[in-house]
Amino acid sequence: MPIFVNGLKEVGRVLGKDDWKRARVLFQLLKHFHDAMKRMSTTSYFISNQYFHELFLILTTLMEWELDPNEWLNDMTTKMKHNFLLYYGDLKKKTNIMLLVDIVLDP
Image (cartoon, rainbow, N blue to C red; front, side, top):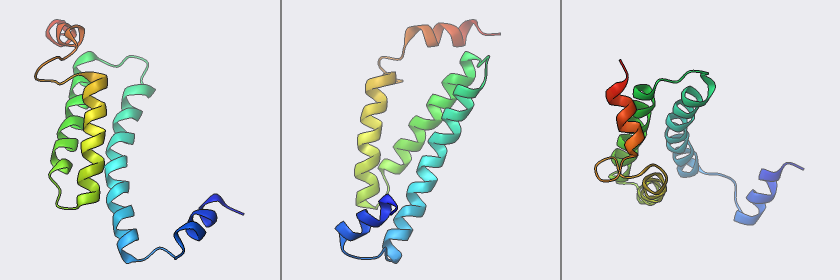
């Protein structure tokens, strides 16, 4: 039996229109991250300025969706942004200095 069937039994209902609407929004959010991570990890020579732009795109996407009126999406993106800033550093305050040096020195 597929795993999702057990999840539906726990919830006690079949997915409704609101659930599918949330799934579509979540898919769009995760697609941004999937595409960025795919570009960053599948290239054997990823230029540092491209890396910076991908990180900046992820951060701006999180900042936009953090202001979304959907409370569940707002909460999720706030947590994701917090983790992003812990891992990569706040681009305004504590950006990885080596990344900045690479961006400046890259022709």
